[in-house]
Amino acid sequence: MQRHIDAGLDPARPLILCWLDGLVSGRELAETLLYPLTDAGRAAGSGEALKKRLLAGGVCAWSVKDCSSLDELSRSLSCGCCALIFGGALGALCFELRAQNGRAVGEPNLEKSVKGAKDAFVETLRVNTALLRRRLATPQLKLIEGSIGRRSATNVALMYLEGVANAALVNECARRLDAMDIDALLSLGPLEEALADAPRSPFPQLLHTERPDRFAMHLSDGRVGLLVDGLPVGLVLPTTLTEFMKVSSDRSQHHLISSSLSLLRYLALLIALLLPGLYVAMASFHQEMIPTRLLLSMIEAKQKVPFSTALEVLGMMLAFLMLQEAGLRLPGPMGDTVSIIGALIVGQAAVDARVVSPIAIIVVAAAGIACYSLPSQDLAAALRLWSLGLLLAAALAGLYGVGLGCCLFLWHLCGIESFGRSYTAPLSDDGPGLRRTLLRRPQWSIKLRDALLNTPDRRRQK
Image 1 (cartoon, rainbow, N blue to C red):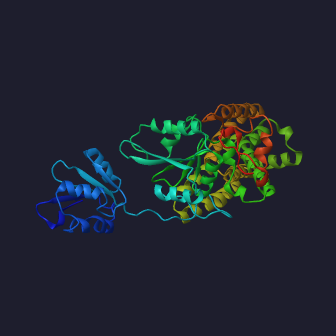
Image 2: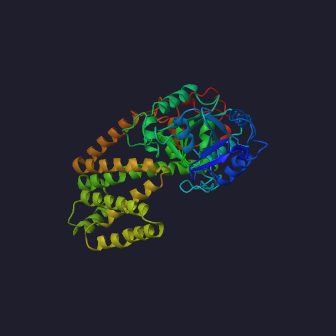
Image 3: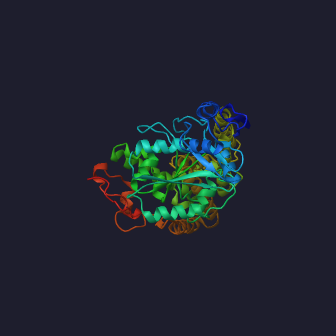
């Protein structure tokens, strides 16, 4: 939109105001520009004098920029600025009068908080950075801002604590961001592939969080955070497999309770990964490993089922994944109804019709519940993929296939790095890595930061 006005109501000095409807606040436009520009006392003088007066603070705008090229003017308009165009060769001035039409700060939807804060990131970058500065009120919190995308020009903020985060890590992350050359950054996919060391791996290599308190915790540990304008999540790097098994409430609970819940989550990881393959291997090739009473019960339930054990478990796993996708894609009440129908009615009907055995449903349901128990659903999706591979290996070679699949699984994990740090650390390091991973010490005893982050200031507390 554009509007022609006369400076100081003098027809000999025409001006043009241009803005994009919906991106600029009409009230601020009228109060900040229209009123002072039409005032004869404040808008007196020639066009060049008026431009200098506006640059010196002639209007109450918090941001003003002199645009000398058409490309710069177009980009400023698309970012929520109002352009004041002068006649002749004076160019234009751009005032940021962005409309506040974003979503208000609310509670997190995916990462539920019990004892922690109840606010979550929103789609506005400035609001997200303000939420972080409320928690880390220190001048050491630095922000490197840039834009990615030739056409989208999406604002991206790289945040870290100076003196805590490793300078080489910050420079490497900034270099990878500068090397991105894409048309538009509208999702996290291109950003993750550009920052990940092994983009072909299905395992997540950047930690997602929608909670500012968890984001601030990782910054205080010496990691680097990334915020993207238009996306209500924050990215944290570098990260390891063990970081995806932690939740922010671990630091809010007693260390014995946190340790027991951590052990439970790692047990769920093993169940989600190995249970379907082990069941198929033992039921098809190694029946001597099954207790006698359980084996007799399985044989009795399997007598009238026309499919093999591997085929019925594979079919149930695929049906489970389809029910999951249906529950996610459909609206809330309809998705819950589909999940209940699929889990109760269809499952019971399949058992009564002798299509699948009850033990197969129990195995698939236990593996699915174990996947949902993991804090990161990106990690759970990767484990489901490997679980299907182990299932096929078990159907071909029994426990030998499961063992070979587990070896390939560990080999793949050990080959992944995240900004020079092993993906399996601290499990693959010398010393008490397993104990530090599974058990949490009391907070008063954790004096130093993680040595693998190479932080300049390792002292966390006295």
